[in-house]
Figure (cartoon, one colour):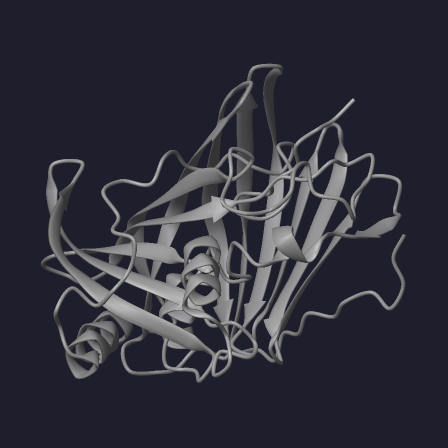
Length: 290
């Protein structure tokens, strides 16, 4: 029996409650704007988020609720991410504790899932490339846009849920982008792309969408279907709200997610109660996995 795992942009349906379909995103391109203009709006958003103080790592803790067809569970969540491209989320629910560790550093993506039995499983690269390991901290996702192995574009002004927003896109470049074919580059952009919507006035992120590729928990190293943007890929939307200033930085203390699956909708809520920045927190991949 197959079970789709997700953790809010990361692990499983037991983890997750992520967001619905991508809303009015384009297939790519800079919408006629120069790279410098794209960089300018990203830097303005980063300034609104960080107050000019870069984030090297972040740790968030809070209450977590996931609702799906089989019922609702509530528990706690701890999320850690670093500017070097690693992230870890641990959810404790009545059904057990689940940990997902992601890395998108040094030109490669990897993912480890640890279930209630304590065993760690290496998950296929196809699943590891999205979401960004720092999906819960938009400041780190936006900051990644300036790294050599990322690209970005400013799509333009739009309306989201009745509010004026500025639409950006950030994606991961293929490891050998200089020799990659145009079709491969376009495909890679599609599957790693994160669309970010900024409040038109404050430039704080209010939503982020990306594709999630489920996997079979019975065979963690094997994707459910051949990867290629097909029906197995699920569009996710996260909504960020209740911004508060913590250690001089603006943080969304409420993250709401909706994930549309083939068997129903998963809805999750994270209410952050504790946030710390730049404490030297690290994320380490287990050396062995099943």
